[in-house]
Image (cartoon, rainbow, N blue to C red; front, side, top):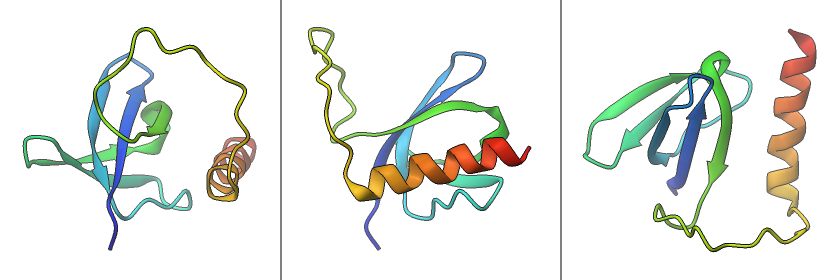
Length: 87
């Protein structure tokens, strides 16, 4: 199964970087394999945002472009929005 690189931003402003392969917005938690090889369970209620990234190194000089979202990203965004509305 393909692992996706993610950066998770929590409501308390902490960051978590790692890889996931089992994310589903229908569960209240998911498991992240951290960069050091450990794993962590993340509760969806405690996160502010989750970013699917190509690499973990940031680029402070990046200028945001108004990009169109592919159907996979749009699907996740819509499912997360639906979850927020249900609560």
